[in-house]
Structure formats: structure tokens, C-alpha cells
Length: 141
Image (cartoon, rainbow, N blue to C red; front, side, top):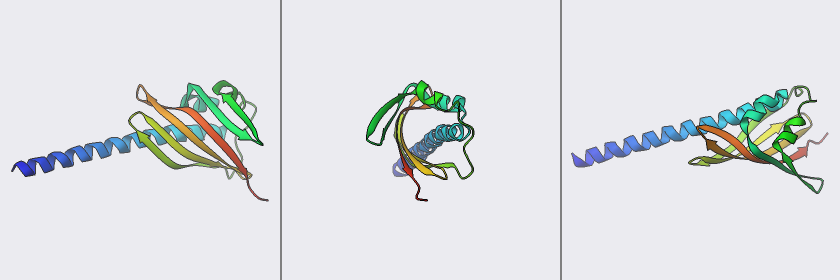
């Protein structure tokens, strides 16, 4: 009887932990999807909601390293219309422990593939992108 109770307790704890992990992953995915939605439509409100106020974008383009603040990054979207057809985002991987996470994502456009690595942190039950590194690979014509 004692072994049966221990087995039931183990199954319950495992099930609860599995559900909690599934919920956290879904919450992280939701944050990233909002980022994609904002990026695709140049909606800086949506993008801004996903990024912590201290977030910075770091890129190395043509051998030049740039550290771009959140506000500077968002300003770059104001003059851009919605992205062209054939543009979509996908989450390649997510890894998380407790209240921190990292995600590898891609945004593919007809001309290029942007690969982004996001570092996220959960603050007051909300996941935020706190750091982003990005690269762009142009497609062959």
C-alpha cells in the first residue's frame, strides 16, 4: 500500500510539473508570436509589449557591431508598411529554466532570412524579451 501511495504521488508530481512546463512554454510562444505579429504589421505597440524597457538589439552587419536600444529599434518601424506576402515567423527552439528562457527564431521574407536569438525573463507572470541578437542572410536570386 505504501508503494502504491508513493507511486501515485510521483505520478501526480510528474503530471503537475509537465503541465506547468507546457503552460510556461505556451506563454513564451505567445510572447514571441506577438513579436512576430507586430514585426509583420509594423505595429510598434505589439512589439513594444514583448520587449522589456531595457532590451537591446545587437547585430554585426558587414563587420560593424551595432547595439540598438529598444526605443531606437521601435522607431525604425514607424515608416515601414506591413511586410510583403511570403513573410512569416517561426520558432526554432525554446529552452527555459524557472523564470528565464532563450529562443531561436526565424523571420523569413521573400528576400532574406533573419535569425534572432531572444533572451527572455518572466516578470510578474509576463514573459519579456530582455536581449536580442540578430543576423540576416540574403536569399540567392
